[in-house]
Length: 358
Image (cartoon, rainbow, N blue to C red):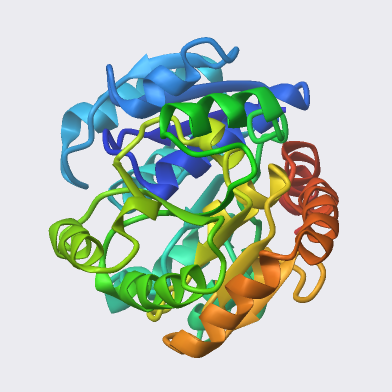
């Protein structure tokens, strides 16, 4: 099949990561993929050497005629079997261009409904395929009155090779950060914001560190609460065992360095790519039992689901996974779980199947 993906968002977002991973998955599966992308942006750089033909374009907003012109030209030249969109500002342009050229349109929505009532009503009905990225997100559209048959679910694909466990890489990162090889590392990868449960996690970690001297915490990300979190860590009793690394463009090597991942959100999450990527690297996940997070792991097998905001429960769960006899079998099961449910091979096949079903 031939696909034209359209994604001119220049920023590093979850939707951008999904766009790149799905385009690469389709190439790996033997399909012909082209993409209209923001020139010199994250998506363009990520797809530059992946076998995807790139067309530079910008959509500042839904009314940007330059974006229409570039996308229309690419679609008319390529005549793809499907137009694929990931970002809200391109939904209506793709619907219009698809109608003009007679090309079906598949749209992905990465958030629970934040669109206007009109768009939320019309887009699932006008696109030939409308995808939510979790059952939780799908239910939000059904609750708005969108017919169930119009909203399909396709999870985020994960490249198993990028996220593979790598002992040499782990040792190099630990050495650079001044941690011994026998350390137990809990990782937090994400936005540093109160809604992500970072303060719950910090309290739970300090409680667990008081009982487990080998336990360290690695914080990857930035956000509006970075300074406040850093100040709390510095004022606490275990500041030397917390490692705030800030924003890192290429996080995949760091999954190899962690023993477990925490996903402690107290606000609803649509899905949770970091949970899946960590498991692909053999790290079990402690996740809040909220939103789409439960769909990313197998509770009791590849990780644990915990009540959001419950410091004692998180502390006890962290200590439980400090036991190698509990943690290591979960890590093995986690990689198998991701390979079976979220690998690029599985998601590419499922995407084609869903496109073929009326």
